[in-house]
Amino acid sequence: MTLGRLGPATAAVTTHVSRSSDATPPGMPVKGPLVDQFGRVVRKLRVSLTDRCNFRCLYCMPDGDVPWIPSEEILSVDEIERVVRICARMGVEKIRLTGGEPLLRPGVEEIVERIRGIPGIRAVSMTTNGFLLEEKAAALKAAGLQGINVSLDSLDRDRFRQLTRRDELERVLAGIRAAARAGLEPIKINAVVMRGINDGEIETFLRWAREQPVQLTIRFIEFMPLDGSNVWTRDLVYTADEILEQARRVAPVEEVHNDPSDPARLYRFADGRGTFGIIASVSRPFCHACDRIRLTADGKIRNCLFAVEEYDLREMLRAGATDGDIEQAIRRAVWVKWRGHLINQQGFVKPQRAMYAIGG
Ligand code: SAM
Ligand code: SF4
Image (cartoon, rainbow, N blue to C red; front, side, top):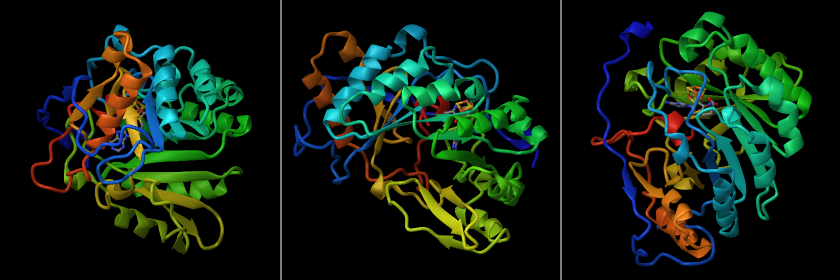
């Protein structure tokens, strides 16, 4: 398939933003762990530091002019720290910084350090496109960052450029090497697989990872309907089963005992040389064990990647709300989380925000 076949754009619905004055839903606990109506407990928070990005990945960003969030609407470092602190008091333990491209956020090292220092936070990690990693890896490590996920969808220069709309493969590879030198651990590689574009590279990726001197866990991600150009169609999704079939051509594969809350199902090669993961949000949804929520760069809580409703904290933060008020607003946002996303059902409604603006 060529990129020219992709399209056309379709309209998405407007995201509904709930106001902080919403009443407490019946049955919702007002203290204790952060729990939803189906009993799932939230332990992880993904914090988007910015929606800005220096890449234009085909599966994420619109091409051309991007409607960035105005800078005055982006949460300040103090505001981010406050929300994380409130979440940590309710049992959130792990923070992943994302975006947009989180390394474009000025003072990202300070953000890592401040979040790392919050009582109850056990780990701070990041998902990045790797472009600025070579220059920032050592400082991030010093600030307390642990794991890093680097997005890399192709090891072929032309295809990398086609997918990211940037000719920067070498720079991203240098970023991964710098992360290893700095001691960031674990290092995971995220590769979104699009049928007809990079689905032929799965074996290459796995063989490459097996040759590296440090452990790199590649996670193949099914293409989700969260792109900014509305190019997603079901036939572009290269499924977990198809990915596994290719992996088995490299060496015999066995499934690892999986943590159900990890979106990636993990596998290892029986010869002991490498593990890899598959994030099969489309063909094998894992909503039943979901333990995460998201904070967008402009201060909205999203209880699901595919949510069409958001819960505004920024207005509360800037209008003098108490920590207790904000805590209850977060509890309400989590309580109403749905049982699972509806990608595979008729009537699925694509969220208005694309991945770069949600914080993937
Ligand atoms: N800019 C950083 C990066 O690319 O790693 C962080 C933000 S990016 C939105 C987070 C992750 O979402 C990346 O690994 C990216 O590959 C993934 N992603 C973006 N759009 C996606 C889509 N439509 N389907 C599946 N994964 C997607
Ligand atoms: Fe930017 Fe990451 Fe989206 Fe690519 S996937 S456009 S690097 S935010």
